[in-house]
Image (cartoon, rainbow, N blue to C red; front, side, top):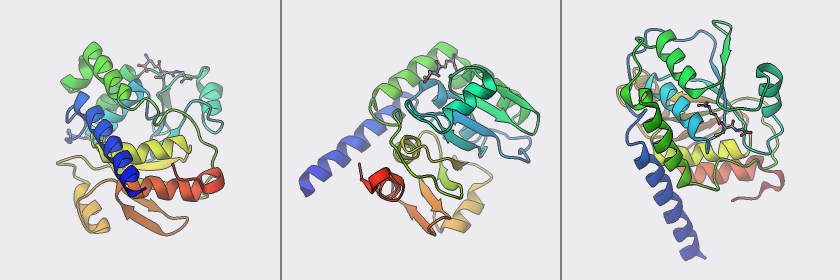
Amino acid sequence: MDGLMDLARFLDVTTATAASAARPNFGNVHYERRKSPEQPLELFEFEGCPYCRIAREAFSALSLDPIVYPCPKGGELFREKVKREGGRYQFPYLVDRNTGVSMYESANIVEYLFQEYGDGSVPWFLRQRSFAVTTSMLASAFRPTRGRHAVRSRQPEQLLELYSYEGSPFCRIAREALCELELPYRLHNVPRRSPDRGDYIAMSGKMQVPFLNDPNTGVRMFESDEIRRYLYETYADGGAAR
Ligand SMILES: N[C@@H](CCC(=O)N[C@@H](CS)C(=O)NCC(=O)O)C(=O)O
């Protein structure tokens, strides 16, 4: 049994690492942020979607902390809101209540974020569109069953918080579980050279991601496999760990 668990974990980390390698270090380093939004941006997405990854890389590179509303296939919680507000089921979808702007299209979202919150210039790995889309599709292909399909869950009263940056394979494993369970969360991006790292380390005790804070239960934890197990045991219907 332990051998099987070890093998499953090995495969999990290997394929997540391969996904990260397809977009090596993109979104892992901070780019200049001119200002921070007063109200959190809202991102409707799902982890397995290559276009959503492109948008998330921009958030990560700017150390922006959106509220993520997971919209996996078969999800019943937030997909409808996107259809209602934007007119169609398409992800990613951005809502910025600070400026009254909402939009589809990852390329437009990237451009908007760097214009509004960055220094106006989009890094090459997001600007080269066909390169970005192809490599992001490759990243998704390494994790064909994760972060795509909804698993019935019970909703927490308060928003969960995840500290992460886009290109970490371990953070991906944690985000996939949040996505599958349709658990909305505040995504705190702390890439290398992020001005927010100091506060993060002071709060968590060390520089390691992912880190989950669940204010509903008081649980605060590192370790992607434990985060995934905790989320399934706490929020999946029936509490099954997967
Ligand atoms: N050109 C769009 C493409 C977005 C797109 O095709 N998203 C897919 C997911 S990868 C989608 O929304 N599919 C509908 C669905 O999942 O219901 C972009 O870059 O944002």
